Length: 536
Image (tube, rainbow, N blue to C red):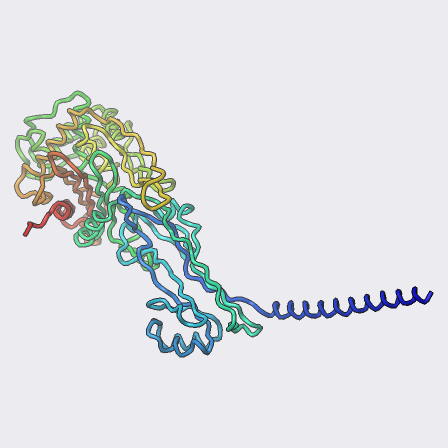
């Protein structure tokens, strides 16, 4: 009995000790939990990075610049350095206010400040730096880093998903950084995956420099001969992708409008297509047409550019002199169906798709029924009336004339890359079509060369190489306040003439000097592309 009582007593003591120990443990755990609950964190982050956009030679078109920020915990050990160190770029007043706020803050720096206590350096990539180009093609992102236009929008999913450099500070119950706990830094993944364009950055720079000088409003499309690849594509005026608000507010100049992809009246640049339709319809091009300065169709008189008339003309001189009566007379002999079919085969009336949701306008193409009206057919025969097209479409058409009649759709995307070194997934190219015979195309090509090289002092004639092409001064039916009509000036050509490497379409919107401004722009771009300084 006595032994039994002793065992019970010992068991009771053991249970009591266990209870005391457990109670102490719970008390300790509750204390730690309470302390933990009173702690918090403050995370600082720079803007996230987006994927890359490269030119055709894998040169980056975005993310070419970086800036550094310091994530600073306002503790006493940092105060002197933050307020006096020359690496901190913001003004002293701003830094003082940030420091006295008592919470971690970001401030720009010129170089790393990781040597300071409770401070970490973050790198932010500048999406659109000072050397940015092709803004209308690349597009821009909004404040949430979502692509809004251009390639940024078309490939938003591929270009998104990258993180940003971040730093987290542990704070005490009063929200002040705990000095003994180092900040936790996370670096973003390096962006290399992205989209590869057909654009050549060097050629794009030339086109933009000349266009910004010579074109108040307009566009330049530079296409590689035969392949249809766009090596430069620019719209003027340009815009700053870092300041979209200013661009939106400029309603007069509409800098966000991509004029290279918009449709306009094309005027005489269409005359070469009329000649191609005539030859394809089995007609002969008149060799002794007499231009008296006008031609009457129905009740309408259509004038030549040279009101006094140009006399007896063959096809090449009619093209060089841009004789409206010649081509109106020729158009009246062509089957409306044949003329309409040739225009369609040369891409008119069809949009050019570069990527999902990213394409140029289709323009407007009169129906066959409309062209059965002699007056509308007359207007169409020199690129007027209910007809409009884009600079891209005109470049595609010119490319067909120098490619033995093969119409190759313009392309802008080489494909995508995972490594930033080569194209891993090439873009599927649109199939070329035969718009006319090689003989017809060569006949047109020779006339276009004569138009530039066979005429003295042609404004589009380059200094170094030969060229071919056609001007256009298109009436719009719209007028200035002084009742002068708004016209679109064009030059669409190729160079060198004998073995073309490039095709170029130049639009001068609301041209002061008709096609002369566009011709001058063409010539200067070609000269800059082909000029080689003499060897010393």
